[in-house]
Each structure stands twice: as C-alpha cells, then as structure tokens.
Image (cartoon, rainbow, N blue to C red):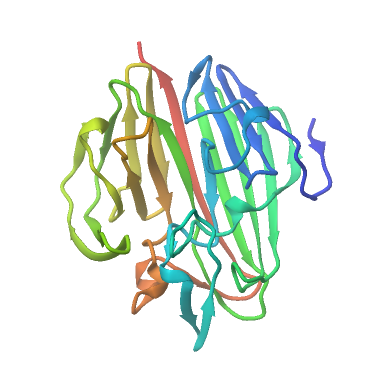
Length: 293
C-alpha cells in the first residue's frame, strides 16, 4: 500500500528494496540517490543516507532544467538577455541546473517505487518557472528512473534534463559505448568547441581520459568490473563521460542536449527543447544489474 505524503520539502530518507537491491533516496538533498546496493556491493558510488551531507557526493542526482554548463552564466532567449548565479565551487559557469541544489517533495512511495517533485519559482538561478517530477521504480534486476518537466512560465522556455550517475572505480572497471561524435572542449574555459568522429569505446576505465559530451550515442552503455555487470540504457541522445584519473569514481551521464547548447547558434539543433507553457518534456534511464559469476 502506498504511503502518501504532502508534497512539501522533507528531510525524510526513503529506502526501496526489491530482491537483492536496495535504493536509498534523499529528497531534501536535491532529490538525489544516496546509494544503490546489490547485497553489500555498491552499484553506484554509495553513502548510507543518514551520513550524506549534500547531493554532490551522492550516487546520482538530477540535471534540470539543463545539463552541464551555462557558459559564463549568461544566455539569450527570445530576444532577452539572462544571467544565472554561481553554483559550483569557483567555476565561472553555472553547472547542472537547479534541481540538484534544491529540496524535492515526497509525493508518494511504496516499498519499490517513489515519486519526488520539485516546483521552481523563477529566481536568479533560473528565470523561468517549472515543475519537475522524478519517479524511481526498483525491481530485483535493476532500477528505472523517469523525469518529467512541465513549463509553468507564461512563455516558451529552454529545457533539458538528464542524470549524473557516479560509478565506483574498481580494479577491473570497464566501459563500452558507441557514439558518432565527441565534443572537444577548449581547456581555457571547459566549453565544447568542436565535434570530432568518435570510434567505439571498449576499454578499461583506468585507460580513459574523457571529460566530454558524446552525440549520436546508441542509447546503451555496458559497465562492468570484477563484481558487477551493468547495462545503462536511455532514450537520451547525448552522453557525458567523465573519467578522472585521480578519483575513485567515474561518471556516465545520459542527457538530452549538448553541454552549453544554450549558447550555440541554434540551441534546438543541439538537443535543447523550446517548451511551450503548460507542456511537458519527459526522459528516462534504466540500469540493469547483475552479479559477476
């Protein structure tokens, strides 16, 4: 039976269980996944939910209403100039939207499903009102997450969405994906400048040196190590891959648009959506989990 909750921000910790999987959510910390485990093995970078202090060190958080960066915190839309506020260390850009920094409401939850909601009033971090929901569905073989973003402004607004999963880097961590192109960034400002052909990736994570957005992604990423075999799928047409050599994690992020698409000559050609008032943009990702035998 569903346990219903008033849709107001709450620090309540949610835990879902299905077979060997346990999912811990922190709605108050950006609607993030604190952790996902198969038995005692972390599937995502995982922290016990009561110990998590912010969304950034979590296992996964939502990217809404945009992914990655808004270059130098400014953009033009429908003939009007807008600025956003700093929200990420000392970066000169605004990063990952607003949803990951704000509390989400618990709308409903059961032992295997939860719905969270964030209602955004226009502010100096994002100038348009919107509502976003995340739905988490856990089954014994994996996790599915869906997001829906509804424009509550009185004009069309630019909208993108996605997720930022972190995976634990293990001795045999291996990544396999296929995409048509890789966007290379200018090292001076970390903004994408040029699309280049990308051969298939099929390599140990320790050998990869990526901090890139890929387009023409086929929608499947195979992630495996000595403990787990994972299959990440999504209808998102872009994928951000981050493989820092000095960290104990790496990131494989399904997203709806190119990083900094909003500053491109044609943002809509790079995945952003001009969402009319009252209309909704939806997306999903799924993570299938198996133990290595």
